[in-house]
Image 1 (cartoon, rainbow over the protein chains, first blue to last red):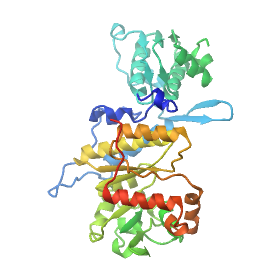
Image 2 (image 1 turned 90 degrees about the vertical axis):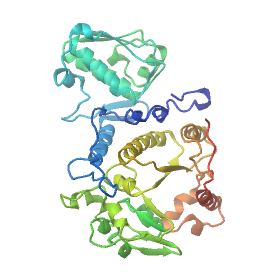
Image 3 (image 1 turned 30 degrees about the vertical axis):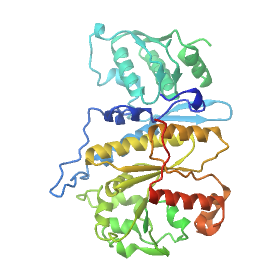
Length: 202
Length: 223
């Protein structure tokens, strides 16, 4: 995270993932395709890849992934407020409700802690992992607590995820509480008008 | 030198004064209806242009089902242009099939960056794409950045540049292109800045940038 006094007009550094290992090239994508090997095919005799048949290949994967990124999160700015809009579609796989009921491995309750501690820095690069953690937690617990005491920086995608979690938990008759929110967390939630949805006090 | 307009919006061709919409270009070469040499238009001394062509935006649907779609441009380039000192491919801003074709065909990548925060976000996505191509193709691109539309009076500009220097040490060309009104005006007249206002500050910036590119003159990084 390249937030510093000398860069005080830049809230977070979208290129920070480049400082990690080569595998981190996937981290900035919202879609967790880390288990999906791209099918490039085998090199031919001229050492040129045979990939890109019409149905599989990097082009479909990359363009689809990037398209989903732009579709799933949309932050619109109006004159005096931010409106966070979650684009609704049938394949909306960010929906906690849908994921809580579908395709989640049923883990024993004791294997997943009912309290989730948020990291200090929460950006779009980390939202997939947090999403995974939260959906597993929600799948096995009726009541979960999200400890936001360490949060020093949080972006709109993470706040949107938490807002979505709160809403979907209600539909599932489950309870999600955000506990010990840090001043920065409160400030960010207040800026986006999410204090009520997240049920926290300013 | 040859410039290929791989952006269906045809901004490169329009900026060079080619405004006709129905001229076939790289689209027909990628679809193997024409060779790439047949599509060349001499637009300036030592500068040839290949326009995008009207079918480029729907090329994904026009390719025969059993044709690999990622190597259309690379295959087209095999049939010509080997005598050129440089072939520049102007890419569309979004990712997808056309950018994939460009990445597969290219050896080097030159990324123009505006000096605002959202450009950093876009660059992050692009670098992720490039790294995945590098892994899959087992090649390493020479990647250079150009700071464009730079406003020295805005603090965010210098801070964006600072972030870039941290991540791309010695990969940013030494001359920044400063924001001016002239640069916004000249495309509508189909002229480059060197033709539209040759003595302007912007023209000087671009001449210096061209020298930097040829000489490999870059900014030192923060690391």
